[in-house]
Image 1 (cartoon, rainbow, N blue to C red):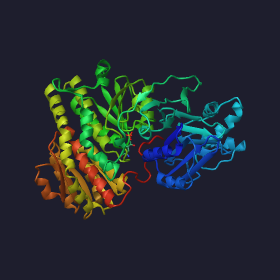
Image 2: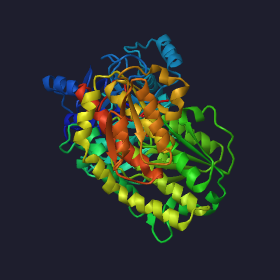
Image 3: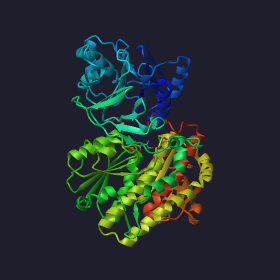
Length: 614
Ligand code: M6R
């Protein structure tokens, strides 16, 4: 949510900052701005509403020279998208410039105090208080004090979360950054340094990165960098290497990142499974779990914590764990868990599921779980992200960067990892070798089966075009495919703005079916599984009321075509793994409907990729 990129070195800063903003735009795209300082201390400060393209046009007309600066792309929290509310924010003297991600919770109190002292505010944002606090702190630390001293002093007064980048015209050749519960990492180049809220902004420039931890501040100059903690004590940080290639963050011939990422399902499945199947033992090799076998053998309750698509993955995970391992599991919105945690004890395992590893609700929930001293496990895609680093145990998805705001490939890899986790726990309990092996062997077939589903994309395109003018949809599924129905509805509403509701099929007759009138469209998941007959009954109930039905069924099923209006097929698979295949037609369906409706698919209205504010 919001993106920060900053640069200090020997090159012109502006092209680097602009490129970084384009890479970060998926994190927020309602306004953008830059502040670039040149060696004489002159600052070019330009902001605009709208997309980075608009900022780039403005900068083409008014280029700014200088070799260090900060830039920001915003997802509004406090104050509507406007030029005044866009970052970087300045102090009264237009000397200190701050780009901020996060929320300053006590900003109203701070702003009132600063206004009483004579500070003039130009925006409605919480972030602007930071520029004025630093301005005030510069006076306090005096002429012997440094910009970093002033930033430390200012941050002492702040409650809330922040990832910040600060430059000052009176302190050329210095960039100060700091974080608390909002991601920030340093990029280490050759005589040049970067700081960004997301590694995708750095990949083109350097693979050497340093993750800042909470309450750390870094000072960057063209000669080097230094990291300190809140007590201003130097901290030795490890330089880590980014994996992946710049091609991972390109569309590679697809019209949208979402389309590219849907088509990456087979590869993503291979990556999630690779090296993690122990065929002879019929179990999974998951080093995080293998290292804690004794502790995990005591677990008698599992809580999945997540939001959005990752929450729906958790719902599938609950069924998997309960079926294979017999461990009672529940799925709780991380945003609820933090404030109303269920009873916990040392036999509870808390599992956070997050693509980004930066979702503030999930991060805070994991911290809450740790305060209760329960074991924590993270299933996370982004390597080195906050949740990955803070959870006690971790399993990476290895799905590669997901740029489309609507999560697709990450969901599929989460389901693959969850099935491995469920087999692992099952084999620690009563699951037989042969059943474990059967599931793992089928899992290894899924990349190929996913390819088969994707080969039907043009048929789903044609189907979707026929549904694109509808404004309301139901998505229905039962047992393992109920969460898929919820996910299908979320995908459609996020990117096409059609109203879509997901329901457990059995719930329909308890109320929602009242909405079915002639032609009302429902997507019904009806693979050949243990609840297939019930799914057929649901389709009959919809058809009896004049509804229009698109069914997702298993190849070879000829019965469904006789009752549903349209059918999309998936290959035969095990029930427990079926969500991995049934979700693909739903992702494509949402994508093509949104495309037909002319929507901005990768950057849907009001959304941002990673929600780093609570
Ligand atoms: O990065 P996370 O998996 O923690 O994100 C959770 C949700 O914000 C995310 O899944 C969101 O719902 C997506 N827009 C869904 O497409």
